[in-house]
Length: 284
Image 1 (tube, one colour):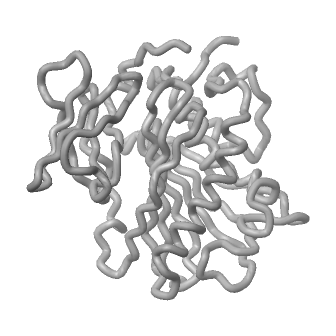
Image 2 (image 1 turned 180 degrees about the horizontal axis):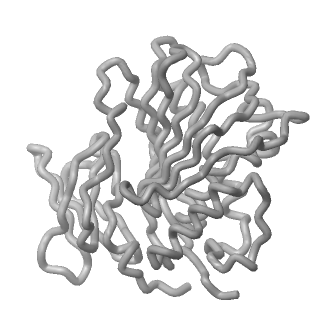
């Protein structure tokens, strides 16, 4: 598996871990094929070094995570106003290692068509299998991919939901390896529940996925919320680890899209514009 890193992938911020779980002392991590050493002192100060480099890596502390980069990002970490709303439940959902391209994971996150077949009787169910037409755009000013006016019937859209509802969605891809879902909130008609997925590419065909939720839910326990989200993601992992080719094809003739794949088409086009190849294949 090729391990060269394109400039567009290099010049991004990546999550390494939830800050609360980083142990005091020395620990090890990995990013984009490079081994990392993390040192945390008794006061909570953290230094991260990359193999073959003398100077420590730049760090950011945001959304409860520790972020770093191996390159020179043009922007700071994307804004997420909901993360600062005092009445939201902040639920970091652990980390899942997946033997798949990080780009495949983001694309799977955008896909509604698999709900009835992979998340049966939770996020979808037959005969409600049709993905209604929705809107997709690449927002040039923010340099993000957005899918809006998405709607899908779900038997249990959230842990706090008691009945099946037609759930509204908005999808947002901020960087090649980070994405957020805004969805109907069963407990507040005028607000969205927010679910983020921050992917840490270890190698082109292996990554760690860091799910996080900001919810309006004062009923469910934190343990219940984490178990619900991990159940969903582990169902996805089975599919992701069996997809072929392992790397995400950016050559349009490699796979045949349907109308339901509009967000995937825009995401792949955006990746090609940027020159992202880490975790992808461009061969016809």
